[in-house]
Image 1 (cartoon, rainbow, N blue to C red):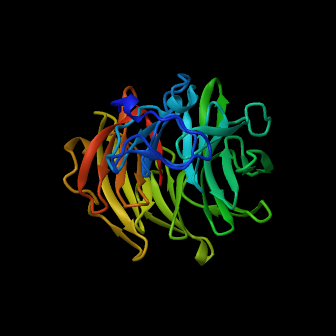
Image 2: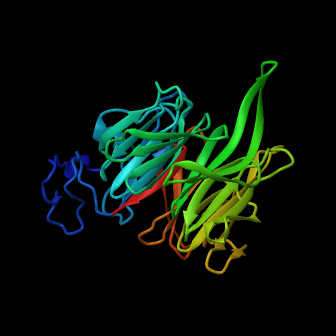
Length: 376
């Protein structure tokens, strides 16, 4: 992912200016009233690249889904003259703002729709939140964040200040999702040390937190080591990683309308949701050969049916054995994006139409694509 004809797109804007275009061409990139060093199209995709631990090389790549602008490797660095930090973890869009959680640097940033940082809050000096921020979700003017070390924080999205903290009975908390007045939080594992060796104790809890009182409402039992979590059609979907021995991956659904009933649906290792479906992949690696086999399938939320046929058409052959790092759905047109990594070079992104037709492959602009958001 490279900037092409960069100076043709450069525009320096001030807050409050009306929409500006760098060309008279109707298809030329435009920026609304946001501060930005570069003009961007209306429809934008931002890719959060995790980077490599201790290398301070996390970043955000930019891609134009309408193909009306060249990609930018690290638009965060371009816009802010600084690196994102060490080990990016999660990114969401809410009310035109982008929120980014950077785990090892341990902070939450709010960006405008052009990836210009507006504010941030660091948790590095907080004795309760010092374990590191993990996943985030937003609702009614607040960002809710899970942390390693059992904590959940309620952060005012406008002031970027912590207004409440909740210590759960858990340990290392992971994925979060919101349905109605409830926040769902995964409790993954506890890490201990015995005789100089690291030991993992895997948990099987999902905590349900009442957002009105910010108190623990109930604890649900799922398969061991719950991690990824997403919401679609007022259902919560969870992928548990198991214990890497005799308990494997599991794709589960929590139904808030049915007393938070938990249903084990399939075996999957990554997911994304959109178009009233959950798109899934199970990556099975033969550790004697290090060859991975990816099986793509989906879950139809409306019919409650697992569709075992692949949702992809004419996919490039290499995708069947690549290391799948993320999947995302463009909520504007339903396109599906699948990000892969070889852990040493920039990741690749594969784009498919809503009907599964392959569109193109492109560079993510950084190492280990973690997630993506779409801004209109």
